[in-house]
Amino acid sequence: MEIKKNYINGQWQAAHSGKTRDVINPANGEVIGKVTDSSAEDTRQAIAAAKAAFYDKGDWRRMSGPNRADMLYRIADAIKARVEELALLDCLDNGKPLREARADIEDAAACFRYYAGLIGKPQGGVYEVPDGFGPMHAYSMHEPVGVCGLITPWNYPMLMATWKLAPALAAGNCVVFKPSELTPLSSVALFEIFHEIGLPAGTANLVLGTGPDAGQTLADSHDVDMITFTGSTRTGQIIASAAVGNLKRVGLELGGKSPNIIFADADFEGAVEWAMIGVFFNQGQVCSAGSRILIEESLKDRFVARLAERANAMTIGKGLDDPDIGPIVSAGQLDKILGHIELAKQQGARLVCGGERYTEGNCAKGYFIRPTIFDNCTSDMAITSEEVFGPVVAVQTFRTEEEAIRMANDTPYGLAGGVFTNDGARALRVMKELRAGVTWINCYNPTFNEAPWGGYKMSGYGRDLGVNGLLEYQQVKQVSINLQPGPVGWYTR
Ligand code: NDP
Image 1 (cartoon, rainbow, N blue to C red):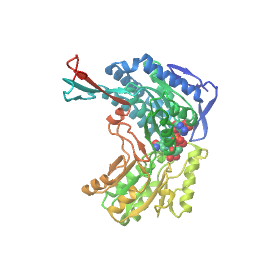
Image 2: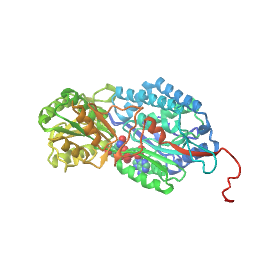
Image 3: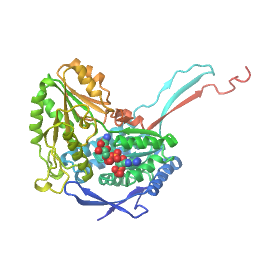
């Protein structure tokens, strides 16, 4: 089996230690790949390559905007040309249904295209300034931050890579990218594309390794000017404190326990369908998952019965068979989810459906779990406060709009939230009060390359996607020009 390598300074190279890691197919536990296992030393080499490319060579940051855009368009085209190959990698590696993996890859191509388009748009400003020093003129310009460390999780391997790589490269930075050790294969394929289209050596470097080794080295390094991370809140805290050393810029897209608020006047079948998408899509391994359903008391029994009927009808199977629900990404994550389920039962939540591992048919060796609904949940239970990151939803009831808002915000997280109602004014009132960065009215989870994405509170700071996503990777420089060179008379007054 070919061992996938790091990509450093335009070359494929194995980790210095010679160690490798197996990549596992979560649908059956089989080894589907081998990757090099990088240490701090390998990561430091990648950082040095990015630093030399940015500060010494400077060919990427100095490249004209249209030429950089052209490179990004070519990356997008190459991704489009390989949709099936890349989708298969994410499907086998992460476990997700093939059609969803395909949609991720299409979206990744669109993301590169979007940021290619943004490069040419006007940036910066021209300012009217006082003439106390003589006639002056000031303008601002946007510049890349420098060397960026990018760290991503396993739930959307290609898409999370793209959400960070596309804007970071568009802005002219040089990067060191560390994907999750669980799902590295599509990242390797993406860097093969970078190599083929001729991205200047050192511009984008790939390090395959674990968080505590490769990831932590990026966060600690004083040669890294910025670090952006998507993953758990705990790791986000570790990264933020490591970043203090050289005050590097930090972007954190962390976890959530997002409320999906459903009023009794909402379109019933629509709310059920979106609630399903909200919590069961991608096996519930979504940072924005609507994992707390807050429902108006009068509608609760009917809603939960219908939700359970729909959940029980979901097909479960390996991603290649395109089921509704594929396997959980790893045995470790499966155990974590089962632990959350046991605790919820012990703490008195009522298990409506699911709640166990699924081992039927050819799923016996995979990490499958039935979609799970808990009813009669209260705010003192772990199931309403801790991120499960699996197909598990906790249902709570409310009686008034004020109570719904209070319950929705009663969490240390603030990533996302939804509201379902046919009363437009109420929808807008609730939205205004929600302390969350990504919100939906009468839908849940649609995401757009064009619109900013990120959290409030302990769900992190900074934004991926949209114009804000590009600004994250840019410095703003002020330039003031003396329009009348010569003595200003300051010392002779
Ligand atoms: P982590 O936050 O541990 O991992 C995410 C990424 O960070 C991975 O690439 C990981 O490396 C890396 N990492 C881990 N430790 C460090 C470190 N000290 N310094 C730098 N990088 C590090 O998430 P897990 O994969 O362990 O998942 C655990 C929980 O995180 C989930 O149950 C879920 O609650 C949450 N999560 C949230 C996501 C989101 O989108 N908000 C996405 C994924 C998980 P590696 O894993 O390769 O060792």
